[in-house]
Image (cartoon, rainbow, N blue to C red; front, side, top):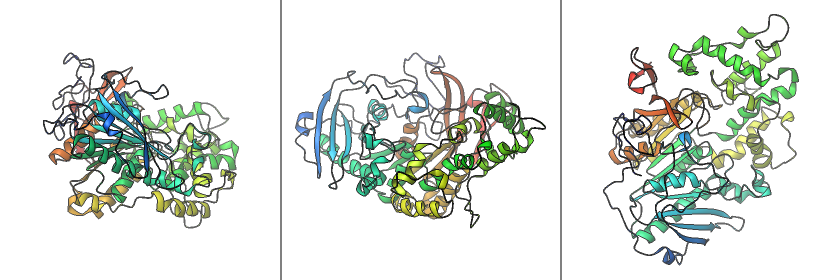
Length: 538
C-alpha cells in the first residue's frame, strides 16, 4: 500500500488518524515528501522483458539468475531479519507485499581472486526513475535483501552486494576472508560496491531504455562508511547518501572497541559485572538528565554531562550498588578512550555518558571479533595475533597505515558537493561510537566543502539511540524519504520526525534536529508528542 503523508502526520494508522495497515513516518516541513509517494515523472516501463535482459553482457561478470517475481510472491531468506522500526529505511513498521519485479543476480570478477555477488531488482511497472543501493554491516558477506525490498515497494530499482565474500563460508566469517587475499580486501573496501553501482545503472538503462534520474545510497555502520567512501572515491556515483554511524577511520574505531578488554586483560579485577551497568546508568541519568529525559530513560545532551564514576566508589566492601577502585578506573578509561602512550594523543574518544547499558559487550573480558579481525586478519595478516600483546603506539599506528589507503575517508568531499551531492549523517548518543567524533568530522567536512557544503551536508545526533537502531530513543524515521526530498527539492532537512516503537506500536515521537540544534520540550502539552518540542541552538 502506498500512503500519502503530510507534514507532522507521524504514523498513520498507529495514531488512529487514518485507516491503513502499513504505517510510515513522515518528515517535517523541510522535507515533506514521503518515499512512498511516487513522483509523477517518468513512471518508466520496461523496453525489454526480464528474460531478454539475461542476454545482457556485463564486463568481467556472469549473470547467475534472471527471474520474474510476481506481485506478493517474494519471500525473504529465512535467515534475514524482517525490517521494522529502526531497521526499515523508509520508517515503516511492516513490509507490504512486493510489487512485480525482475530479479537479476550476478557474480563480478574484476580480478582473478574476486568473486563479488550482486543483485539488482527492477520494478516491472511504476518505476520512479531512481536507484537505491543498500549498504552493508559488520564485515559484509551478505546481501541486504530487506532494505532492497523496502525500496522496491516504494518504486525504486534496488541493488546490493555481499562485498566480495560469503559470510556463510568458513573463510567468510568476520575478516578471515582477507587473510592472504589482498584483492578481496580491496573488493570489500570499495571495489565491490562501486562496480555494483556501475553494473546496476547499466542494467537499469538496458531494461527501461533510460538510466536512473537520481541514485541514492543508504547504510549504517559499515554501510555508513561505505557511503562516505563512495562520496570520496566516486563522487558521481550517487546524488544522495545517508551514512549512519560511519566507523571512520576504521582502525581507530576498532581500537576503541577493544580498549576495555585490553585493560581487563592487564588486571582482571577491573571487570565490571554486567549487573552493575544498570546501576551506573541510573546514576548518570539522575545526575544529568532532564525530567523528560529521566522519564524516557535517556540523556538528551550527553556532551554536557560531566558525571565522574568516582561518585560510585564503594565506601567499604564491594557491592552491587557501588564500584571498586579498579572498576572506577576501568569506567573512567572507557569514557576517556585510548590514548597513544608516547604522544598522549587521543586515538578515538570513548562512548558518551548515557551509553552504559551498551558497554558490557565491549568490556566483558572477550573483545568483539568484529574489531579484533581488523588487526589479526586485515592489518597484520596474522591469525595468532593476540590482543593482550597490543602495543598502543606501534600496533595502532601500523593498523592505521595499512587500512588508511583502503577505507579512511578524509573530510574533503568537495567534488561530491560540487556536482550537487547531498550527504545526511546520523548517529545515536548511546552508540559505542561517540557522536562527538562524528561532530568534529562533520565540522571539518563543512569547512573543506566550501559554500556549497553548507547546504549539502547535515548531521543528526539522536538521544538514546544505540548503534544504528534500538535503545530508549526514537530510532524509527524515514531516511529514504528525507534524502529523496532533499535531492528533489534542494532544501536541506532541519527537523525530522522520529518515533519510538514498542511491539510495533508508537509510544513516543520526537523531532530529530540538525546539528547544532537540539530538541527541547516547550514546557506544556504531551511530552510524548514531537509537536511539543522545538529545535533550538545551544
